[in-house]
Length: 227
Image 1 (cartoon, rainbow, N blue to C red):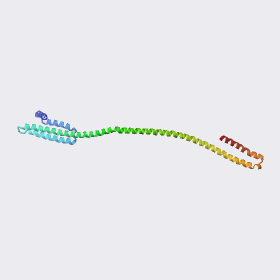
Image 2 (image 1 turned 180 degrees about the horizontal axis):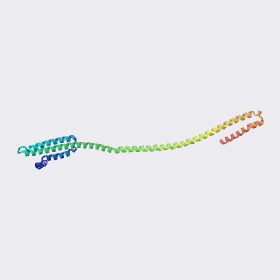
Image 3 (image 1 turned 180 degrees about the vertical axis):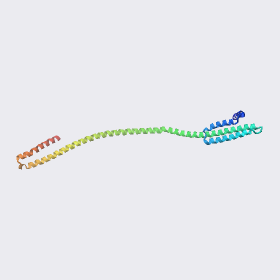
Image 4 (image 1 turned 45 degrees about the horizontal axis):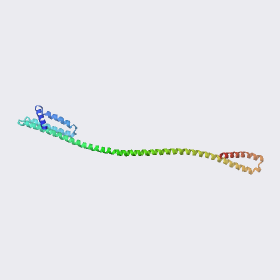
């Protein structure tokens, strides 16, 4: 098939410039290698240069006075096209191998990602369970804090009430101590007066005793009120 198409191209090119087919093929080849690396592109350019040299050699064969020059020319063109196709196929095979290698790497990466994705539900479920446990623990801690706060408020109110009672008792105790001191002082004074009443004039005794009696009456009324 390749030989027949090549011969047809050669027959069509007999009445035209032989370089037209080579240039057209070179253009197609350049489109093929657009995705190649710089090193591969350089190799391709060298191959094209060699093919041009072969083309010039074939054209020079046309001027040789040989009966078989036309056959040599056709054979050289066929060899040239075969060499170009072989070079193009070689580069395509190399590119396919590189693509296959990259594809294998991609497949391995995708398998790893898929394996990780498959294992994620278990870890996610474990994380969800841990989050729920922490939420429950936080709820219990919050309830304990609320209960402690309520207890603290009750204790604070009880303490305030006890402090008020203590202050009242302290005030009563201070008043009682003051009254007791006055009572003791009065008793001492009354004792001294009673002890020395014989040396006092009668009117002087009554005059001195009257305020003491009034004070003792007031102290007695205070004691009754306290009880």
